[in-house]
Image (cartoon, rainbow, N blue to C red; front, side, top):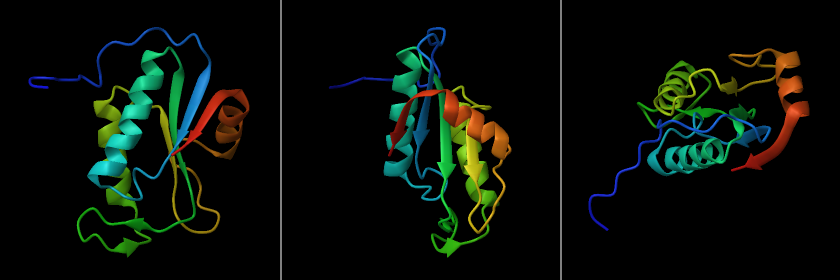
Length: 126
């Protein structure tokens, strides 16, 4: 297989199949395999016509993309997630809940997250 190229941000059909949520650990584990697993699922669901959201909702510590050590500091991880979601053409279709008890979600508040969950036709837990 030579010369195969996939443009993850290519035009997608209008979302007419409902909301799909992909739960994953893309920001918590900012490494190649975890990143590509999430990206493939997100791109595929978009191409199938779903209104796709990526949600990271865990109390786990994150791993620093710089030191590769567990940490409660998540700013680098959110920047990593934001960059990848933007490259997929989904800069406003993600929610990240910071580690620690009662961390408020980034990009949405609790009520918005609950509304999103209630509208979901499909939820995939990676």
